[in-house]
Length: 401
Image (cartoon, rainbow, N blue to C red; front, side, top):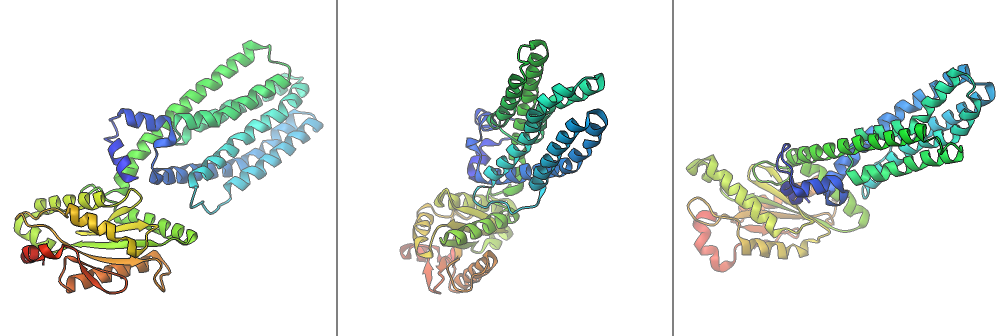
């Protein structure tokens, strides 16, 4: 989750062992980074496929001018089939909610295989039809299709092992085509071409790893509030919308806790904004320590935070509140404990059509908690519960209220 990214990303110019490992294998990628990488990969696949869907058929002009009619007709047929596949890849589609990264890699693999299969099916045909120097030149250009494909991997944010696995079928098809054509013994030509393909793969792996590191750095900066480390409101809304849809699809409940620090304005007014910032950092750290790894914390604005609890009914929020009681929310500059007012909302409530209505209800209940004396929770059924244990209430009333 977000904590894992934040620990692994230090600065764009700094790398540690964990970051290098994350660039070598996708195992360390968080769900947020996977979704972002999936959107980038899919967008680039659709762009390239769209261009190829237009440009590949235009190449038929060269085939008709250079080769005999029978060979040209076969090549044109392969071009039309390839263009249809490219068109299908470029066609806008709904991105998978549950496995967007797998969908993106599958689309990329198809994009890579089309030129490789084109080369495989046309190799023998071109070898037999290449009589003149012009025909031989065009045939040699076709032979470089797998190498160009491997070079194209460089524009995608892939880890080293992903680039190698995606390149493996391309290299295999290229070697298979050479074996079928009976030209495997011409090491001077095909040995050099294989070496060049491996060099292109190395460049693509290095480029993909660099993009992975840069993307991870940008994701952390864009998605997380620099003061508290919580999600920003914009990125939090995106994550909340996704979780709402996933929980609706699975039939599982989603619960929100709208948390507002009590009488925070007095901290800024009496002790300055730096003291207020320290209080917010402490509050955020303590709430995150109370949350589970699957939960999200969003800084909604100022001293307001939203805790998103997937697969959790409201009646199971009690352990979270207990952990918050045990850990505390931090201390005010005068040494008194900080308190908060909390409103709870659930996706299983009636007339909950979207996540916005959940946030609105949790926000309203948070204000009800303030009106009932602060330092408490208002539940979906309307009842109020003090957050600080009753034995401590009298000691904190003067400051937490």
